[in-house]
Length: 142
Image 1 (cartoon, one colour):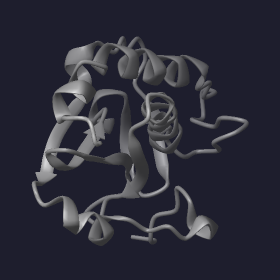
Image 2 (cartoon, helix red, strand yellow):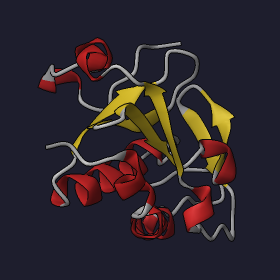
Image 3 (cartoon, helix red, strand yellow):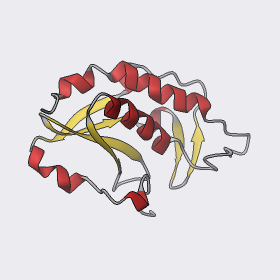
Image 4 (cartoon, helix red, strand yellow):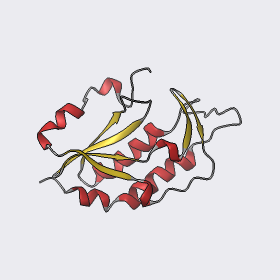
């Protein structure tokens, strides 16, 4: 049985803490370079951390890439349909494409975690899922 979206909303504090751990570990130098992420942002790592928390609670969750901008977030299948879970990148980074700068001093709270039903039809989940493991966290080039 799939959990209702309210169960995911109740986890927003835990999801914010997971996102905060990723953000805190993101260390850009004065030129905006991180040893692990290069000049890129941290959204894919934040999405992965959120997905790990949710999957650990039995939620059917996967990462997805925005078709509008270079951004990775989570989608989940709940009793209420397909749900988007995200910490909007505008809260913690500035940039575009594959070049992002960390905004210093950010502290995430549960209120920063967006949990929104994007499609109430559970049967539409395959339309939102890309199960090709060769492109995990990959977004099409802008």
